[in-house]
Structures are given as C-alpha cells and as structure tokens.
Length: 338
Image (tube, rainbow, N blue to C red; front, side):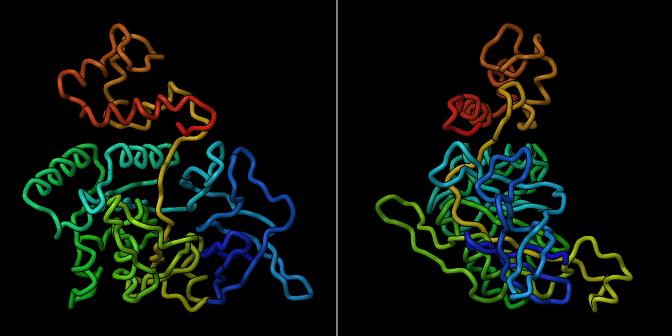
C-alpha cells in the first residue's frame, strides 16, 4: 500500500495513507538508495510502499521516485549527508538580522543547496519588530540583493502573525508560500521557526526556546523532522491523486495539499559529490557572469580573463555572495561539504 512519510523518529516512520490513517512503520534490511550517501534511507515527504505482516507490524519495502530532496550535514558524520525532506515544493529559510544574526554565508549555502537539488527557495526575515533603524536598513539591503536574484523574500513578525484576528496565514504575505504546497521550514536555532510553525498551524505543536544571552544563539527545540497538514488551506494527501481518485477518497479535488515540514535547527548546508567547476552553477549571479570568462574551467579566483572576478571588483556581484562562493570552494577536505 502506498503512503506518505510524515514523521521520523530515527528508528521508525509515521506513514500517512489516503484513507486518513497513520501507521508506525520500520525499514526492513539494508535499505539504501543508489547514488546518495545518506544516513537516512527514507525521509520526510517520501512516498513509500508499505507491507503489513501477519503479526500487524508494518514495513517499508520500496521507495517511489523523488522529484527532489534537500540535504544537510549528518550529525557526527560530516562525510555523509542527512536528507531533511523529499518532494518539496518550496524551501523557506527563516532569517534574522539580529537576535540571533543569520550570516549571509549560511543564507547562500542554503540557496546553493536548493539550486543543486532543484528545490525552489525563498527567505523569510523574522523578528522585524525587534529591529532598530540601522538593522531595518540592513534588512532592506539584503531583501533587495536576493530579490534581484529572483528569490522571493518576506519580512514578518511571527508573534504578530500568531495574534492576527484574521488568521495567521490567510491575511499574510506568506499565503502564497504555503497554499497548495509542501513547504519546508528551516533556519538556525533561535530564529523563531517554532513560533512561526505554531502560528501557521494555529496551535502549539512545536516547543519554543529562549536565546542564550551569552552566545546570542538559539537552543534546539526540534529533534526530528515532521510534516503537518495546514488547516484552512486544504489538504490533499497524495500529489498523484487524479480528480476521480480524489472524489472516491472523499477529498475535494478543488482542495490541494498544504503541508509544512518542521526541521531541527540547522548548523550547515552543503553540496555533496559536486566538482569544484560546478559550484558556480548554483550561484545565479556568478553563473550568469561566468559565461564571459576566458576559460571554461575558470574557478573565479583571479584567473586571467575571469569575468566574475572583474564583476566583483566593479560591484556588479555582491562581495558577500562571492565570499560565500569561495567558502564552499574552499571546502576541499573529505570531512567538509562543498
């Protein structure tokens, strides 16, 4: 029977079926995915085939093809990856200018990862109610930068959304991110991801945490990834359902799936098994200019005739973006991500 993985605890998976039931399932044997060096063979958002034994235990026996997935560095195994989620329609990174500060390098690594694995991405700038005038100017500068690269950006206060009398999503600019989509929420610890998730769902699902006054960083409140249906936006359980199947399953075909994936606080994104010459392909601004480089294998580190290097010097490519590119390029050790 086909199901959708909506929860992972590390040892078992919660699988949602089209009749509305959820079963606790396990992976049988050495279940691995060809070509992906990952610590978790099954991820949130995967469509799987489940077999039930006579004793009532449920086993995941097959994995349906993914349209995409997004990775992070595996905990305590930096040479391997951990798949955060699969079959994602939108990956939203929650960013804070302060309280705590999200670095542009972290933002750019997230965006490069999304580019590499074909996941549409956007940025949600949170806690704008806490910003002073100088920080608001920084916010505007960053939004202009990323919007010029065709990444949608949003500026919100999750606390204000939670108290909105018209509902947290329907009346907010975030409606288009979540409506009809499977949306992944990610970000450093302390950026307000759990607060935003609770506001989106209209109930306290995720625990919220305080910011360390000593380190100005958040503390992890989410341990495992989990996928939640968003009430009021419509929930269609299976993206493969046709209109006739929707009707027979009791699902309004006019409703579409609206899911949000909560992920643990992320320390690092990266590119796995990518050649150095490919890295620039995942920076939209750098890739656009790189076509004018003298050499096709130019790494954009000052080679003769490097159009990218010249564009940075002239301010046509943001220095922060170029430095982020160099930081990924510099991850040459096996123990690091590109």
